[in-house]
Image 1 (cartoon, rainbow, N blue to C red):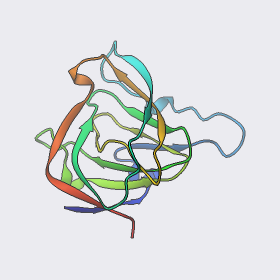
Image 2: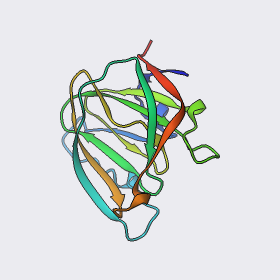
Image 3: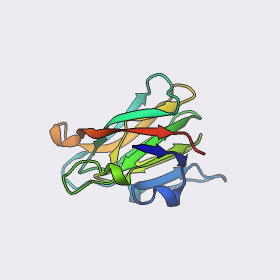
Image 4: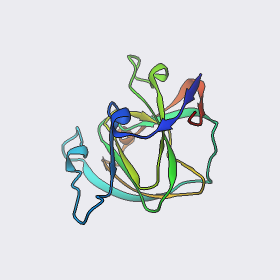
Length: 159
C-alpha cells in the first residue's frame, strides 16, 4: 500500500486529534480540552523524547501504536519537520490501514492524538528532534498497544 503525505492542517487531522501552534501575539493558548483520559485515577505524565536519526521519504511503516484510554500530545522543543501517520481503529481492534493518513508537520506545529488513534512512532525529518509529551498512564500494559501492520505502508513525500 502507498500513502502520500500531505501538509499537516487542523482540518485534515481533525478525525484523529488536534493541531496547535504557539500564539502569534503575546498571550497564552490553553489546550486543556484536547487532554483526555477514559480511566479515572490515571495520572498525567509529562516526558521528554528524542527521535532517532532523521528519516527521509519514502518511508516504509510496518508497526503502529495506540493509547486506547488516553490522548497523547507532542510539543516540539525546537523547529523541526516530522511525519505524522495515523489510522482509525478497525472492527478487529487493529489499525484500519485502508483509511490511514500521513501528514508532514511543519516547524512549530504540535499535535494531540485522540484516544484510540493508531499512529506511527514519532519520526523526525531533516534532523533529529526533541519533544515534550503529555499523556495519561497507569504504568501497565493498557498504557499502549502495538500492532504489526498486515502489509507495510509506503509513505511518499507530498506531491
